[in-house]
Image (tube, rainbow, N blue to C red):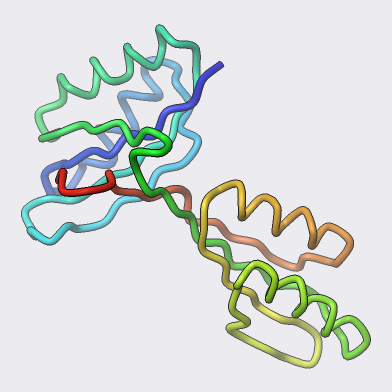
Length: 161
């Protein structure tokens, strides 16, 4: 089973996300994560889609996406040739006795404390998926109240656009 991260340049029109995700569901493919946002040109949006499957399925996904009218360009974000990041917000239960421990873990990962209350902390972490996973694994001994992840987003390294 392999993984692939695709950066799709798509028309910035209503229904594009529905058409792209519909292609995946009709064919029985699962999307691991998807992020979408407008680009420097308001006529286009950038959609980052992380998928997993066998080699033949991953090739077929790219072929099917190329057939969609709304898709202008498809670029595979290969490890080492691209920069991919994810954002994690995690609310951790913390009283005065364990707050320093949680802050120490956050500091190690260069995470930011974005909210503090008597009963909890909200921590923001941005980085590669492996970094986010390692951070969450270290928080395993603490009570996580809420957790949200953005999914991957990324760009190809260098001058290529």
